Length: 104
Image (cartoon, rainbow, N blue to C red; front, side, top):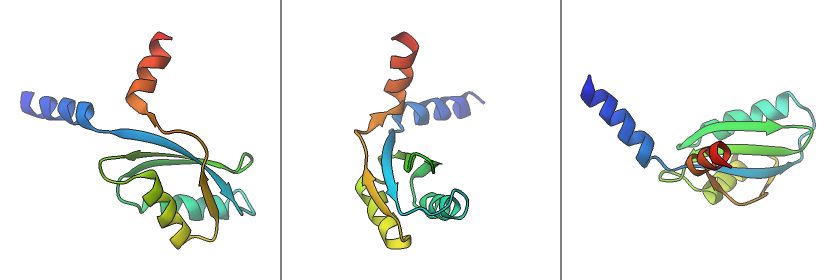
């Protein structure tokens, strides 16, 4: 049991979870378009979570940067959907954001 806890702890420390925000252009509805983008995003290896805001035409993707990067995600979505994606702002390390939110 100690080994399992130790492995989980180490994987948490060494995972490189990154968040990138994209602007999404071309969505016509908040149901079908969002579902299409979400399904295609979650098929990309390394993507952990995809949050789309139809009203703001934005998408937040949380991914493991050891496996995939923001450019690969953007290229893959351009190839598998009919929407336009652009990176909105700088990446952030989720772990450092946690500590910044906790202590600032």
